[in-house]
Length: 440
Image 1 (tube, helix red, strand yellow):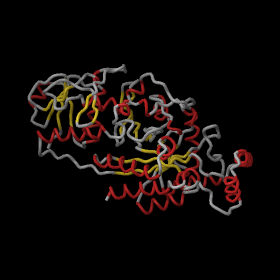
Image 2 (tube, rainbow, N blue to C red):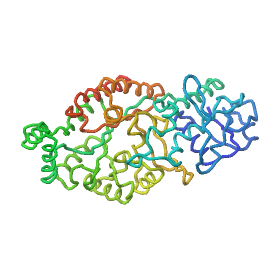
Image 3 (cartoon, rainbow, N blue to C red):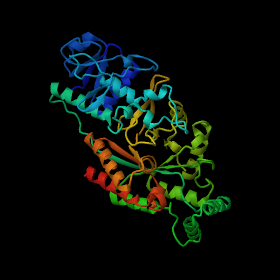
Image 4 (cartoon, one colour):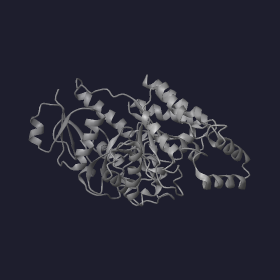
């Protein structure tokens, strides 16, 4: 069967981007766009209209005009409630298949339109979860883009019941950030003495004892959870991704010295059984040249090119950060998520190409949004392990409903089950068990 023919009066780069995302990538069907009404009316294949008015009795989705604009501006969002969920870009057109401009709503979320407008950043210069439109109307924890794509599919199937839409499968991608490979080992004399001094200053004799026993080889470093991660990989047949902070030491960059032989051995050992990407340092946002240096140093150790990344501290300034990644041959980025709250920053639980609103063009940078981070649950939300498991169950359920991809962000230290992370290893193991069951 032929693909869908879509009539729209003006074919812009935004229009091309959104329909490629929805039809090709989410619904997995062929389609073509036309602005020729005669061609549309004479065509026999399945078709629908996306316009500000209806021309035929075919399926019609009302356009609000956002996809024919250029640049960004403050928008009237037209928020309303539907099926118990807040929607936006409401349209008053009884002929429209949906009471809102679904394609503009998708573009607004996926392009991160609101992050191009003026906002008050946090102390790390980040656009925060609490500023987001999705959080303010209560849809942050729902992958609305995927939900809407499924709704579009059902509308099309009502008119064309025999159309063969492929069935998607639920997927899980575990990812790890290695911000600090070891708690006590390989820190060098100055940092080690500094650690003893700080612990003594706080009267933290437990830390002094633990540090001493680790340095004497009596017990394992608490952050050395790599064999445990490997055992998870084997047990659950996982394909994890690792992002290594491979930068000069600084206020926010406190990993092991990149020339340390044991650290280099660890990085190569991880790369033997998992894919490794760069974790660009904190100040790479202000100093884009740092990315090139850090990526090159990591590539020299791995003896292969690195094409994946996730920003340290999730520092992401659009479009500059992503443009720097593109210029340094990064093809896949995993930064798209919030530190303070779980959910779907871009409203979607599948990867997508970054659209640069400054240049009004789709790029080849693939964005992979994550749904939850360990530090979000403990440090920002201050959940108990039991409550964290409940929250994970809710998020996994939302992704499973749309057969999307669930990406988690964890750290080696949170699997230590020590100090502030005591009791949290079982949270991650519950996560792995839940996604394993969902995958069947």
